[in-house]
Amino acid sequence: MSAKSQEQMAQATPEQREKGMKISETVTEVVFLAGPVMGLIVTVVIAAVLMGTINFGFGGRAKFSDVFAMSYYASLPAVIKTLLGIAVTWFQSPEQFNVKNFGPTNAAALFLDPQSSNKALYALASSLDVITIWTVVLFSIGIAIVAGVKRSSGYIAVFGWWILITLVSVGTAVAFS
Image (cartoon, rainbow, N blue to C red):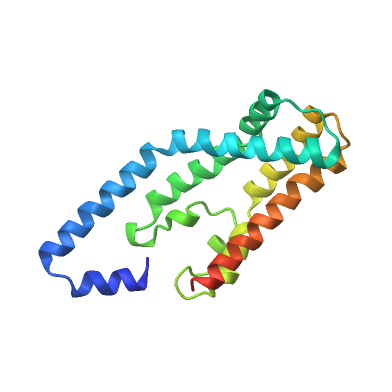
């Protein structure tokens, strides 16, 4: 979907175009095959960050194993987004598929064109996602329970990280657009 990539492909020879497509297919396959391993690594990082935040910032007493299990459980709504993304691929042409925003559960997927929209606005609208907000709420409740702190502490810790990550995402989009 990148205009720059499309321009490069249009200027390439048929052999270069075919080689580029094969490389693109291979990278896509590797990314999807590595998904479960990457999911495990991401969950370990999330659990460690949340455990540190709730234990040191809010006086909680969470154990890593409890936070890790809660993180996997709270991440389950992402399965719905993945299934929606799979369903969308049946009704869209491959050229319209956006791997960065594959599920139509956020404002960007519903109202903005990924190529012509302002990149910062698109990044911000992508973060306003029903499934993501549901997941963040589950994380908030879960971390408060496993750490033995007030729910408001769980909400502050998790939503604080989510807002920070959203701001970094928008800032990155501004910097590289």
